[in-house]
Image (cartoon, rainbow over all chains, first blue to last red):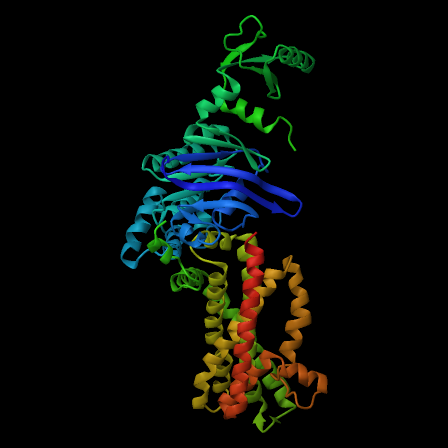
Length: 299
Length: 264
């Protein structure tokens, strides 16, 4: 018996007509950790998020969130979860504070605690000065901070973040990473879906890589890299014809390769000096693992 | 999990969930009450004045009442329809399709059943208030006050609940907002006209009379008229029963429609 699990999925299947969005997914999120759900568009990340709040009902499999069985006991689970969706669904004609007030009611915070809860959420979002500003007057980064703070107003045990930084400037993204990292440090359990590899690498204790609705690998980012891509890679640049030739000969030597668009990366070259092609050496990274496991072609 | 936790399992139609959704509506209302009040009160008042004085100059009395009074009591149902069915059709569609508000609410401990119920109760409360406006205008134009009129907000509320659920159901089943025109042209407009608001139904062809009898709007019209001019206890009780039945049936249909729409 390991540490208690905030989320436990076993063999979860979700079909939409002929499309199987989630196809036998197993997922463990231990309490007080941050798990990153990484995968290309269409891998089933958003469907998985909707399954966890019973806004989608699984066709097969077992789902448990905070010890509650889904979908039957989803309401109890939702009472202790916070959800920041990918698409902003704030009430745009209301002020920052009014948005938080509505969710303080929806999450059943006692009257005596409501004021403090709203103040705390304003502080988390760093929007104390903007409390009376209408949401449609906020910048994109502020709106996203408010969306996350809204999900935290009732001090949830589990936070679900669906693509928390999609479509934002790098500066704003870093600001949000700092916010998520602070929450993680406080011990909030977080499940975060993302297709930004850097985001998963920086924030997640464990990464689960999804492809075609199932988990293709899971583990701490560094272990995944070591296991699937080795320690070092060589990057070779050149015209397409040369790249194709390098790719073929490296594969003949038994190396794994991946294309990056402008170059070829030959992976797992540590301790293979004689056989490895000449090029720029670099440490292997999560992106190498991601492309190896989810495929180079876009469906 | 312990037995105590199982016992704490949350039930259906819980008050905190309904309150949460209602609080959202009330806070939102503070930002758009002017336009909502304008369209829900001015439009029926225009009907009242246009028909009351336009037609009233040709027809002075109907069924023993001054025509202005006949229409003034009848347009309460118009105000109810305009403040429930229409805003709930469009509002529901906008909230799930464009603002995705319902996704946010259903991620909280609120079920679709509670969401739909709270939204309908809110619209019904508005209809209960806005429905009284034509009656107040008619009073200003010489309708005699009567104690029975005190039940008009309640009649408007019960009617409004049904029509709000009707609007929510339409929005739930509609594939696009353009589909609403079929419902407005083929359902709402005929029911609005064959409700006995502007002319009595008893001289109409048999088919139209039958349509009137199954039209919940007609029973709302008749109840308001009887509230102003004198109740016919058994018949009016049956009409109340009809409105309650209509409300309950469309309430369940609305929940079914929205569950299909909101939960994959």
